[in-house]
Image (cartoon, rainbow, N blue to C red):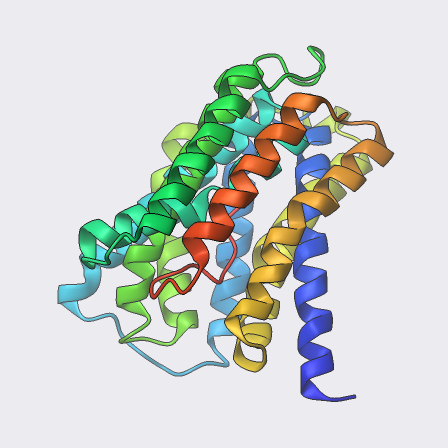
Length: 303
C-alpha cells in the first residue's frame, strides 16, 4: 500500500473521528459530566499522552522569549477554544455546531489581514459577506430539540467563538512551528492548559456522581481524549506530510456532512431549511476566502 493511500486513509479517519465527536460528546453532556468538567478530562488525558509520545521526538527546550507563545497557545488553543466548544455544544445541536466550526478559515483570513498584512481581494471580501450572512442565520435562527439543545442561538454563538479562538491559536502556532518540533510545543501547551482550565472545571469534576456513570459514558470520554484529541493530531501530521494542503482541506470541509449523517442516523439532530441555507452560505463563503490564500488553516480545530 502506497504512502499516499495510507495518508488518505488517515485523513478519512480524522474526519470520521471529528464528525462522531459532536454526537458522542453531546450524549455525555450534561447528563453525566458538565461541559467544563469534560474539558478537564480531555486536557489532562491528552497532556499525559502527548508527554509519553514526546519522548520519541527531539529533545528541545522552550526558549525564554517563547514562553509567551506557549501561554497564548494554551489560552486560545486549549482553554478558550475548548471552553467555548463544549459550552456551545451543550446548548446547541451537533449539526449547528459542525456548520459553525467551518467559519474558522474566514476568521483566519481576517486575522491574517491584520497581523500579516494579507490583502483582501474583492472575491475574498464577497466570501466574508456571504459567510457572515450564513453565520448570522445560524446564530439567530438555528433551532433544535429543546430537550437536547436548550438554547441554540447562544450555543451557536459560542461555536463561532470557538472558531475565532482557534484562528487566534493558528497565529501563535504558526510562529512556534518555525522554531520547534510539534511534539515539543503541544506537550507544553497542554501542560499550561491544565493550569488554565482547572479553575473552570475542577468543581464540576468533583460534583460528578462517578458511581452512577455508566460504562458507555466513560467510553465516550475516553473516545474524545484518545481519538478526537490525541489520535487525530498524529494522523493529521502524517496526512499533511504526504498529501497536498488542498486535498486535506477537502476532508476538513467534509466533516459537517459526516456529522449530519451520524447525528440524523443516531437521532441526536434533524435537518431544516434554515440549517441548509446557512450551511450553503457558510460553505460558499469559505470556498471564496480559501482560494489561493497564503495563510490558511489546513489543520483541524481543537474540538
